[in-house]
Image (cartoon, rainbow, N blue to C red; front, side, top):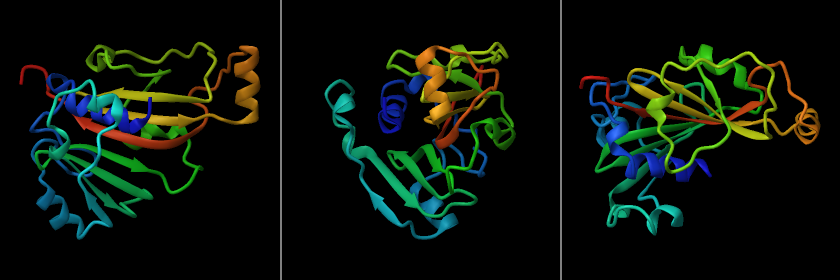
Length: 202
């Protein structure tokens, strides 16, 4: 599953699990409260601004007439990151997608960057229940990491998902021979997506 499809699934198909009006991401933006105009006022004119086209997997199975409500602002650079995409539904911020400056940003640094505990997730599906991961801790038991995998952090007001590229010769050898590695979260960060979520009781 591509990250774009995953974003669309979370935005359009599982709204009950996400979007807390009072939640703010690491950059001081509030999901389902910050508007398109707010972002432009804060960051200036974006590099690109378009109504994004839904992937076929969403267009033919998801809610109807939502494609014209989806908008994406592109900024390059953004803070310490190479670029950022701000995803809006009905002009309200729903997700932030960011890319590192280079392939040198290690997956193992995510916990420190976002002050959160991350879990290994091999893949996501449309039925994945993200809140069910809350409170889980990643084990230190050696495991076989695939060439591409995800890391997930579930915070009280956010979901953070990162796509990890572990496509090295060493990783390929371990995967093909099913040899586990003791190093947690090998590889480098491809991109990171941040969603707001409702806090319990809200």
